[in-house]
Image 1 (cartoon, rainbow, N blue to C red):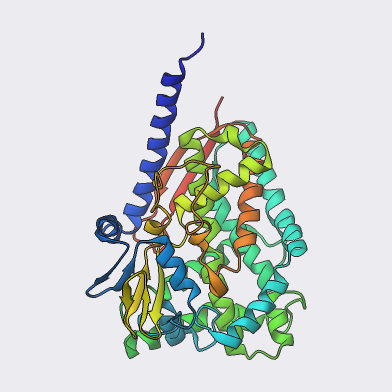
Image 2: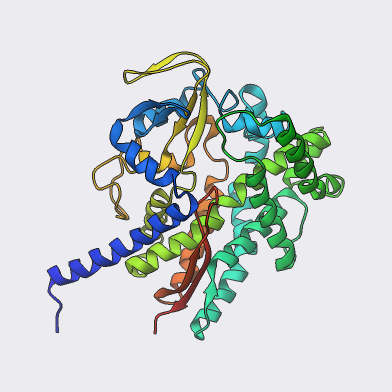
Length: 405
């Protein structure tokens, strides 16, 4: 019996709505006040000034213009995340650098993340564990993708930094992942500088969290990030700052995106799209847009600047609502792999300009391999899930999947 196409479309649309409802629950659990506020503010225009927040940007073209204008806007001014990072992690922590120092450090990190190095790293670190997960799924066992992603991102960062080995056990990898989580809690997004008392407490915690990096400076392999920093004459304080910034960003994106992506694909019934690499990458990219790993990006206005009739005042904070901006086109709230996304939206969830996410290629390669291996187990469904509450980056705390039989 052939199911009428209208009925099939209705079933597909219902599955898609269910998938997107769960995504909204993930966001609501993480930010029960800020998330609904963002949905309201998106209706008030492409850019506006909100007391207590600063300039708010909802439009992708304006957002991209802000990110590309390095003379008019900075990551290290009043109200920016870089200001807070400097208070806690010191003057040299990647996320708070501008100009020549940023370009030099970025070039060093790009060399450590070359295409050949990434291929070998992803294959070695991720391939074996993903194959084990697939084997477990095929015999009817459940796999917690939230835990698996935490283990693999922790292990990846240990290897990249040069403080671990490919044979590290799960406990060491999870400990490193937990460090990344704690880095986020040390420097939360606030509207102003930290008080001296909070700075002192946060600095003490920051040093304790980065002791392993400092201890590993002498023995880090030459090709690792810490090894390269050592060879370039970086001080212990600078190594701590750069390493902490990389942990803060490097453990968050994929560890949150992998479970959410698998949930989206399972809930929407899209596992059949992942057979060939072109369709799989299109699905990965569209899921990343919907997930929006960095839902907010902060800048500070370096000098008065006008973009599309909106005046940004010097010294004010700019909050780019990335979650809103990447949806600001026709049917942008939906999940449609393979469609043409406006140029202003394309890749915006990873930033733009000189501060475009340095780990973008690594994250995409990890997610591509993950979806390839998991789809080989056959269609999966979510058997148990729990959202994480009051966290900076929305995520699942538990995401167990099993094979559809």
